Length: 377
Image (cartoon, rainbow, N blue to C red):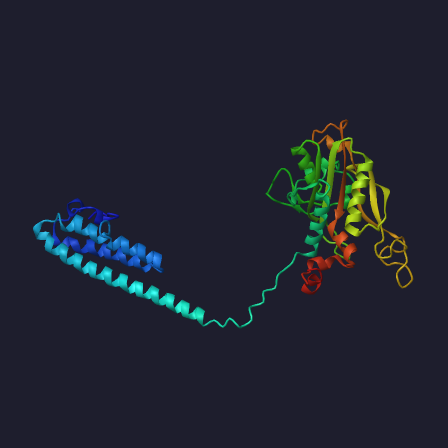
């Protein structure tokens, strides 16, 4: 007999049934279909759909069997079809009623269980978490730069040497690479260009300038990696925020004003700032930015007398490096170095957090000690 998906929608003649003994397999198939559907009726909406599907007067399965099997059947088949239909009807009606009672009983039990809940009992205390201190400092820095027109961009932590070094004016044999050597990845195998874990978030400065024409004002927060031996002030993984502003006629005064605004917003209006000449391959001129010691007020003397342990008596603390973007960098992104100018800076988020909150060891940021984290929740 052919496999008919819905035999009740066709006549016995269409199904090739001419003998009474052929009806048994047809009714067995229909009963199996009903058993499967009634077993899935776990709630009242599903039960209603099943009831209409099988007992509906016009299009229910039993109505289809009556119209398509019983009425057009030959006299010798009518008796067998009628007997099979009556057995099927009894099974369908009894199981549908049993399922209705089971659903109603389950609803009643659920209602009784709800009524038995003692609402005077105290609720379950679910402590609410908070952002990690590093994330909090990230957010504070982002808010400050948002207020003066910067936007945030993020990029991949796995980079190519081109974006991490070469496009930032650090060619292959530049001595700066010795200080910024990083972790190289042998992925994929035999790749023409090696991949590495970025040593700073500066590659996104190049990627951003490739996609945008000036004006550009962005900060780039994220994780970076270097082959540093872990100690109280070093870690092989830490966090940075790079900043970049490029436009027509940006001067060193714009740069100093932006940095001083950030520092006074972050540490408070009482801090003093200064710049010292320095060197970075991707900025010219380059400077180190210092802030007056926030622990001794710039005096170099501890509160109880003696030398301040934070600034070693100097009264100043080095924060980060910065400078005006080297014109050579613009050549990698097709900017006109004669028309545009800009400044860039990079600061360690972990270091800023340690200074602002008086933390002595960078390793505590990565140890997941709840006692430490709760102090900043």
